[in-house]
Image (tube, one colour):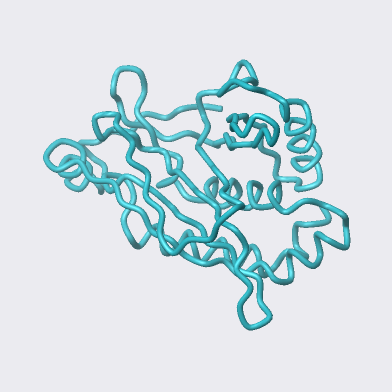
Length: 218
């Protein structure tokens, strides 16, 4: 996948980028509940796990919007990837440690699901942080806390405030009024992503969850 440099001098977000990257570095997080009632029922009928579906949905919406595919290269130049792949956490129950692995994205849910499950099984007993080799540069991070629900979640990333890719954290199901909700925390950098963009992302993700018949069987 290609990384396209952005001409900041002619970029509409130039002033915002310079301010939140050079003058007042700022990241922020937002937590929202995503209704997955119908999707979870359909997945149970198919005998498929929910976590790969959540990873697929997040990656699909990330790849729809440029704001979530931005990063800086080794020389500090701002650019945008054509496409991102998910890097996500899995849990070793015996050792009570987690590992971060990655799976190549596919627009076909069935294809992605099979590859994701294969990776999870392959590295389920890993005891190191990043057991899968040759991780691509064009990734973003997803983690899951299936043991607890939350109404807010914030990560403190100490990278001189220059870490641009989004970070997503998924919480334990919430049962409310016969609906199944998942808390989702989204952490972004204000230089490339405003509240409008996060709101649009959340709405698009909910729409994808609601319209699972359009992609779940493909």
